[in-house]
Amino acid sequence: DAGVIQSPRHEVTEMGQEVTLRCKPISGHDYLFWYRQTMMRGLELLIYFNNNVPIDDSGMPEDRFSAKMPNASFSTLKIQPSEPRDSAVYFCASSLGQGGTYEQYFGPGTRLTVT
Amino acid sequence: TQLLEQSPQFLSIQEGENLTVYCNSSSVFSSLQWYRQEPGEGPVLLVTVVTGGEVKKLKRLTFQFGDARKDSSLHITAAQPGDTGLYLCAVWDYKLSFGAGTTVTVRA
Image (cartoon, rainbow over the protein chains, first blue to last red):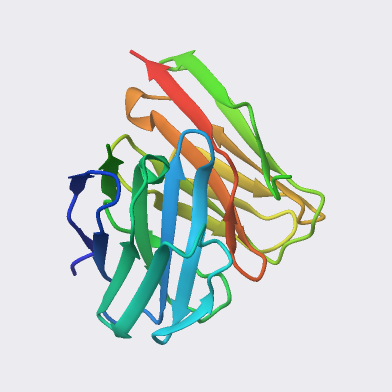
């Protein structure tokens, strides 16, 4: 079975540009999570969805960040406008909510560099 | 303040040695997960522990959940270079929270 798919794997953009990161979760998983990882702050949860509905977006740093999940097989994380401090690795993960443990299956990540 | 405190932050050992990393909190959790992340990849789930005092083994890795379900440890026996990576613990507390991780380097 295919795991979580993310695209692009690498993105280099200039400050002020719009960036869109994409994620395809594992089929059948009903939770989707977006994370950001940096050396300084570690792995931070940005937002998560249950059955395509955003449940907690308290980790989204600013209004420049937005996430959507139009259907069970696709999600986007958008940054507009991007800033150099947004440079990080962004991970998408999916999970089955049953059992209450929410075990995460991560994608390979998108390394974002904003110059 | 971090919900989960992991120690040590860095650990470098020789192949064949044993090591233990810790994950501690002042809160009680219903379950706790351990992940390993290799450079350039996403974290991969190793184990979930759910019962206080529980011990789980995964080949040379032994995971223990504290009796009070506030802490956990990961012990690696006879470490190999393939065990090199960032070890993260995580708990669900209305949302998933990760510790800062322990970077383990096993030298050949």
